[in-house]
Length: 415
Image 1 (cartoon, rainbow, N blue to C red):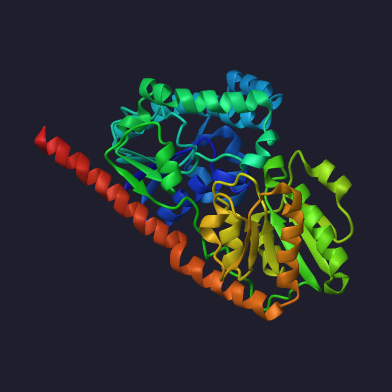
Image 2 (image 1 turned 30 degrees about the vertical axis):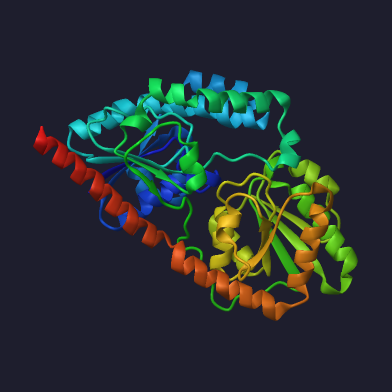
């Protein structure tokens, strides 16, 4: 097939949803499809380093003065406003230019189907309509809030904006009809389906995240770290609640010093300086690392911890499970869809007063029973292999593309 992957960001270096378009483009191309990747100029350097063959054929959309102005204004705003309002504005600005290039590719016969994997927000409007080729959007994953006791993490302004945004999403998606006119809408779960601001005859559930076993496979003869090594991997932002992770670690170390429980933190972000100042003994901040190095650190660890307060997905949970690690995670949002009692511990964030203490108990339970931790790790690896393999995901997406193309051909034949 001739496929266009259209996404503002496509990179292994930005974390989160930016990885998804990159994986679709790489794996579909590896299967022999003719893939055109359209993405913003800011992705060029990372793609040239990490996927040079793909970068050589990608279409990079220019970074304009208006892009830079919106970015500078958004940088001064609270996280929720920056990501949802200014992030969506940047995405729409890029998509406006993307429309022209996609239409040209379709008119020239170089594209027969278009896939827009991000933004994953169900409420975000799409400008990709009237492209001359069917459009598939998603999987979308959203409609999520902080647990009730943590709503104060957003400012009053941000909470008001979120309520307003959800209230007007239906009208915005009527004025900007990309999602209404798409061939297929993909949603990660029932929560995201309920958050869709449009009614559509073709809504298919497809989990957002998956694991590429060509990368996330433990190297041979892995040497585990001494003691009991926890690992966190992700952006250092407030919703990840790494301050609670550090509190839980300190409690676990104080209660069971004999277990030598330590924590490695992979990732960077605006919270790093504050977190480093509050971290006690047994904590290493390793910063942002390439995925292959992250894999090696994960493989040498004993368990992953991710006690986020608002995590729609949580791909790192699946990556850690693929490497045979048990997981300690929040029983809220995406991780709760991945972790089972056989593969780790889910700890509810509420009540907040003893969240850290309950996390510490889960950490100690794993550290003091290596046999059980290893059994959970094996169960997690089997679960990921059975349900979250990227190759199986590509099988499914190929079938969805074929369905969209078949529906278009039938429509044209009737016309």
